[in-house]
View 1 (tube, rainbow, N blue to C red):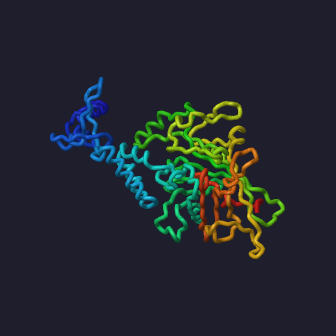
View 2: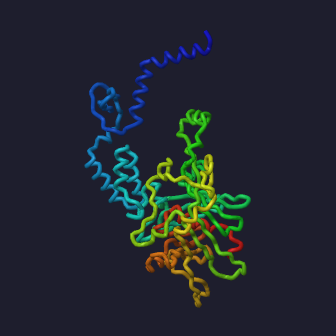
View 3: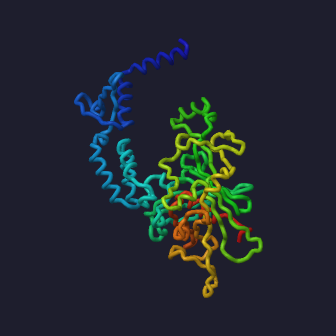
Length: 425
């Protein structure tokens, strides 16, 4: 008997085995616990499944978990109590755990949990890309690790006050290249590659370290860039979800003023936030608030277009280095560093950091809105410090930000202060 025929016959015998069917059915009952289940006294495998009669189709058996059977009113009250009680980490983990039980719990948790702009708390990873609160800033600190060229953003006042209870929000890896320097930003530090699922964006500098661009990872809009049958077969063998093609869109630019005469003084910087309109600071204005990490093109139906009006052809992890259209640049929010004052007694430049900065450094800065006369922005709103960054110890820096910046944008702006700037100091 040929080998191919023998393997085919052996496979048919294995598929007809009743034990194999029973194991397959029992395994499926533990995979998708989503809808309501009805109790049955026939067997243990059928006790966690419910028989649903669908119109126009045959009867189907859907396996469910026991926690999905709770009445919606009771479930809503439980999650509201948990969300109200836990206001900070690590207790905030209980809210995330509620969203991880099943689909019904997750949907109700999403309805209850508010954005950082509304409540000032972090709950889900998408909160890092949502604007901060309007009233009081969110206080964080950055820890620099010189040996590994990594920068960790933590939630808390300082390492001394937070200790091991501080929540790590983001992590950046510094990568030096021939003509530029990249700060790759991740949710976690398990995989320092651009193809990692934790990669959410980067900060890129020019050769002199005087200009930076912030890139955010977005889904691939070009429908022609599809995975090949060979890549799909490799994905099937590895039993992992296929990698979605992504591009990096230029969402902000940072420029440091050149100091050709080498005069002493603080750095001067200016930020143009292409993804934040200047109207967000006007009365009744709002900033873009994403509700989930972009996994499909439907969340933003407008694909990037080059100067000739054509869609750029891009593959996996491509980068759109060009600036946004002029119409976007004219309405983008501009930030500038708050001018310090010279202190005669201390003989140094001073800014009021309200006790959050204790060590003098050229890296310290405060950013405020750079409003023009044509913008309808109140004077009190122009004086508000949107982002402040300063040193409190060796390789420890504080970062406080508020609306309309997100934690990701504020972290990327602060990373630009760590770059080498021989012509800006």
